[in-house]
Image (cartoon, rainbow, N blue to C red; front, side, top):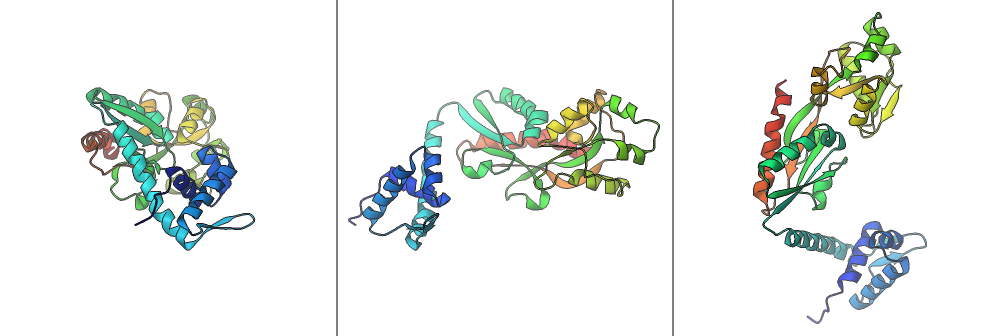
Length: 302
């Protein structure tokens, strides 16, 4: 029982270096010099009496003892971070951090958050844009809305709505393509795409096949990072994009956009919501999840 507990600084340097297997990358994350991180780890090794890393010319490798310590200490630092966050937010005014994809937040999510906050004025809501769907796993987000395939949905998530895609363009752009057949229109139009994971043409490919135009070339046109940017380009008359009906329904009703081919294709992708499952502020998180499900049920009934 003569062990002396290592300092948090040296333990933290080891954990970050172990995660990156690099003193240089650990130094960048910790805002220290590479030599400072190396000294902290060396001091820790001397205190423990065994090496934590095998040092090669251009890389590091964890020793068996290092692997054991990293697995335990990584969890310990996550718990420390969690405790600090809970202590700092333990006030009469609760704080809820919500993460959602960029297009969801711009086209629809922000409006919902404003409405929910009016119903729960004692809750401060912080919005974070997250395109990867992993924010909840880091322990700094309370509720996450994720865009993914149904078969890849995370455990404990609940469906908000599934994606329903339809071609959309400005009325002026559609008028410029009048007088020709639908297939000629598709062949001559500029197609607008959104980068979806590794696939940038998948939406058009699936829609064309379902609509009966499988031979129309689709690997052409303009590619944008988000669906919101596609819809902005559509409004400026840049071409025909694929839009999720949930995002364009108001613009269609107002005559801002039109559907030159009113064939909607369902997808096995959708938006799913899940919340942290610890007890701290569970009531407000559950209320928000239920609120979002009620707000989106209309999209599943259309």
